[in-house]
Length: 140
Image 1 (cartoon, rainbow, N blue to C red):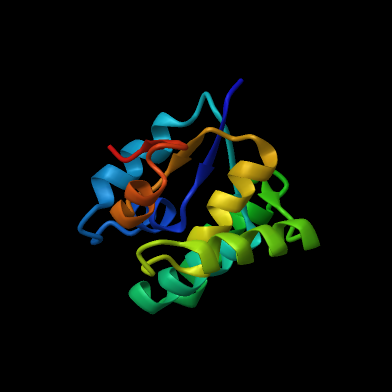
Image 2 (image 1 turned 90 degrees about the horizontal axis):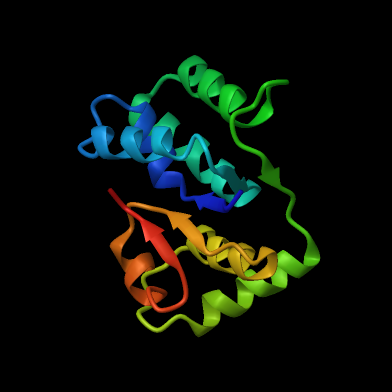
């Protein structure tokens, strides 16, 4: 079974019905059901922050975060932040070419390299363009 790392923007778009990319995010997330979905705690923090900022509803945000990442039947396993992931993320962050990627974005690349994951689901064109030669990106 091939693994797929999921960017925060896919979760946010998929769960916020008024997001401009809601249908795309939902389609991507639902299309990954047969794959081994993964993310890391920096992405979880970004999902929680953006969901709360956009929805202005803490109970909604908490329910989504719990269902996705923390319940007994969580939909997506979360990789802990190890020293190795921290250092690899730092390297990606300082070596990026276009200076448009967040720390969380860079952590996806670092995690993919460390865990030999070849597929990343994202709606971020800057991320996919910078690393299109190295990874397969699911964007639709």
